[in-house]
Image (cartoon, rainbow, N blue to C red):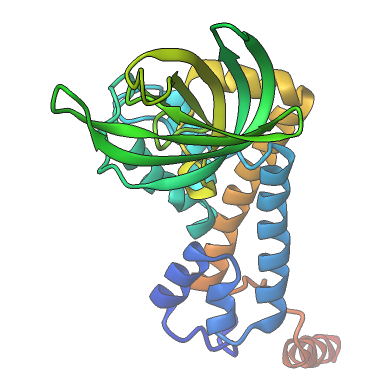
Length: 280
C-alpha cells in the first residue's frame, strides 16, 4: 500500500524527471530528503566510476556492431538518464562500426602540437618537440580541398616556423581518445615550394566533447583495460549499479513509499480495544 498522505503530484512527470536526473522527480514532489539522498548516492556512484575509468566508463556500442553484451552494459548505464545519454549522440556522430568517417567541412584552427620532427638535407635533425600548428583549408593542385598550414616551435632556444604541405594526415574528428593524430610534410623554401624537406609526426588535443562517451573499438578497450587494470571492471560496475539503482528511485517517485498494515496509532488503539472486548 502507498501512503496517501504524501502528495505525489503527477506521477508521470515525477517518473520522467526521476529518470532524466536522479532525485529530480522527488524534488518536484517536494520530498527534499529523498531527492538529496538519491542525487548524491546515484550520481556520486556514477561519476566515481567515470573518474576511475578516465571518464571512459560509458561505452555505447557503435552502430551496426551487433554486440549484445555491450548493448546490455550500456542499457544499464542509461538508467542514470541524462548523464549517460550523450553516448547516444556520440554514437550517431561516430557512425557505423568499420565505416570511414565522413569528412566535416574544413575550418581553420590552431592547436598545440606534441611529437617528433624529422628534417633531411645538409643539417639532418630528429627531435621531440612541442609547438603550435595553424591549419587552414586549401585547394591543392588537383582541385581537392585539404589542410595546409605552418608549425611554430622552439629548437635549441631558437623560435622556428615551418610550412606544412597539403598532404596532411589528421585523425578522425570524433574518437574515444584525448589526442588526434597529426602527420604532415614540411615544405622547402620559396625556391622549392613543393619539395618536402622533412615531416612531423605527433598529435594535437581532441576537444572533450569529441571523445567523451564515444564508442570504443576492441583495441581501445584493451588498451584502457591494460592501463587501469582491476579498476576498469570496478569502474564499469559502479556505473551499472548506479543505473539500476535509479530504476528503484523512479519506481518510488511514481508509486510512493510502500507501507505495511499496522504500526499507526489508530491501528494500535483498535487492537487494544479488541483485546479488551475479548477479555471481557
